[in-house]
Length: 433
Image (cartoon, rainbow, N blue to C red; front, side):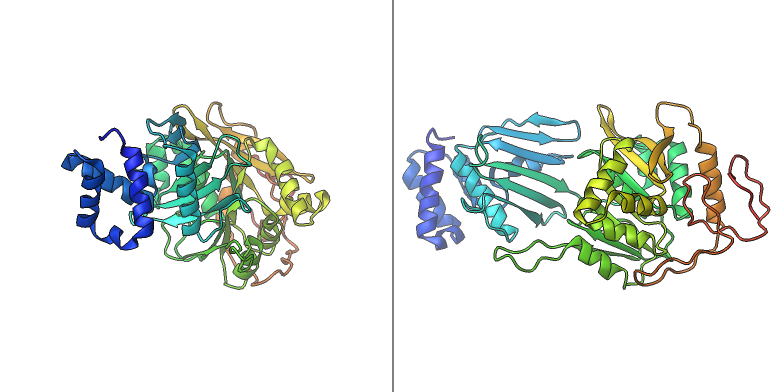
């Protein structure tokens, strides 16, 4: 490459700004390159043209790292600090920008592509870009200041894949035993949360589980950013929308949850619970919409009650109210973890009592815990209970006289027909009449 490539590219960018039509005339642009560069090979001319194209469309310098297989994240901490994640943690990339101004130009262009404003008065922005190859990019940009290291970019690559539970067994995310248990959990219409840290595989597992839902059920999926793509013929996705640069047009997750209740859902799913919408979700799950699900950022099973308390407080629900709602709405928590050998389902836990406490019943590194067999038995029983359609709005769920609390979770959403005489070891905590 010519020694003054960066200077040449900057000069050509100025020329393109003055003569926009030049961008649509590659032959004229190539002549301009040769005039300004002096001695330059055809290969170098093509490389300059490629850099110009990337600087005015796409992701510029980052296109070459996004082309690598398995890329999940690209982060830029400054012009010389670019890191990528191909599934094994962040590693420094062998590329760098010429200056912070170059990073800032890219960040500003990406923000505009997302319909967001990014400048000194509004120094951060985030949004989503859909690409021609079927992937989507979740973009976050932060200018300097407030960033001390220069303009920062965080890019998450979202690939639309139909991963099944069998696929997750094959790549060792799940064991065969855990996959069998999860299938039984879906068939029994158990309400659950998938928790874990960033990049732990929460969304992938949730999508695979939703693909196991019976085809005669209607799924209503509410997301901040559309990521879930279950292999299911009757899944409807509602996506929240941020306010535009003028501050109007916002559609919140809580609003979409309320709308979903009027759309005849069999199951309601929240892609990621991150705010006050948790109050509406719990209310929905407590109006007869069993089998609901969502993901939550939490590093361990025991963090779930406190994390839910904090989010519920944003929606005006106090601790006592949260625990009452949570105890009745959510049965199971699945913990995903990102380990050196890959993403793994680490634990399966249940929520019991009021105030809610968590109890591990299965983990990858131990024999079945106390309560494991009781949980399996309760799933077998619930699978054979006839399902009735839930009310279409926030209406109290009717409680049958012959309803007994679930012996595992303590919830009273398990209808046991009067006179049931099935024998299930370790299941009942009280007498079934």
